Length: 51
Image (cartoon, rainbow, N blue to C red; front, side, top):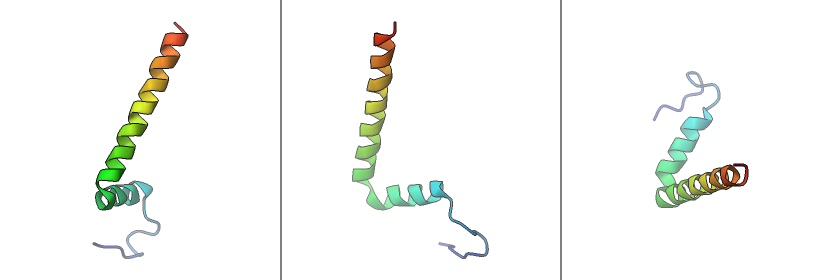
């Protein structure tokens, strides 16, 4: 792992998020799935209400 400040002045949030997902494993994927399902439910609900 190359975490030298010279090549990377501030760490990218995407990299940090990916590293965190790999480290946490199951819980992170569960949260991601719940968030996705929640967003889909909101969108479907709005589409149903505004048709």
